Image (cartoon, rainbow, N blue to C red; front, side, top):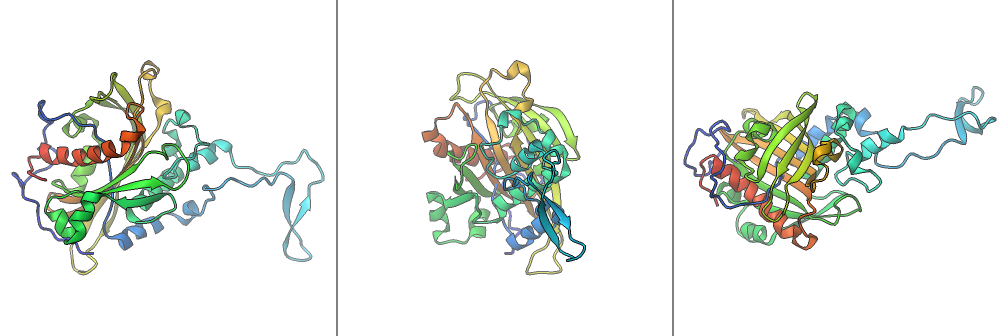
Length: 362
């Protein structure tokens, strides 16, 4: 669908993240996460198909069958492969490294319980193949309305907004669309809601991606942060960060260690106008890697971003549509309050970005 370039009313029109300032001290405390949803589904699905076939076709979603008792050989006379029993039990066929298998499972939207989160350090994503699989999972979460992992349900407030108006009109009025997801399979945090939002942000896609990746600017949109530090660089646009926060509902400081990756996707064009200018699109994806938490901080409660996806699409100068998906586990948050707090955190994150950039919004 075409995206109009109509701007949300705001106080300054020449806003970039350099203009943004930290939130005022008297601004209401909020607990926040990073989020996502999306537009231009057919074009974005092309981004998924652009991932090398060799990577996409790997059987990382299922357990590897035990082939230790058989060896596949070529029959010269018949010209067809056949199976024969091994003559010696000392001969073993090649097997997938169990650790590598765990790395691939770790790229799924919902991480299976069989994978130990505590052992993940982010080094898993220094392998480009694993990183591509995680990017594929992230795009699947923001591009597809339905997938094998999550069942999405429109939030009641969003239902009312879209009852008599189309999505683009609602977004241009400054509203925030919210969807609540339920996991279809068991895994880490599968009992917790996954929150998806869609909104217009008063920054270009590139500036918003830079803002999310820049640890020195985290307090612009997260007043609860006591500071975020880059602890390891894994490659171009990929790093591990550790963040200390003090949510109002928690007695102690909380620590999170997260792998973050940012990339520019292929430029998208308005499907109704072949002559339109290329539109920048960026993807920022995050996954908890608690295995890299410093020994001095291991006694603190954790706040794990199990999955964070932000799809950012330019719609005009200093404006982009952000579709965000967030799945967070925090021991300080009772399960019965997770849905309400998750929704309010997702909305407040967007409002904080707008407020810090001088925009008036809903």
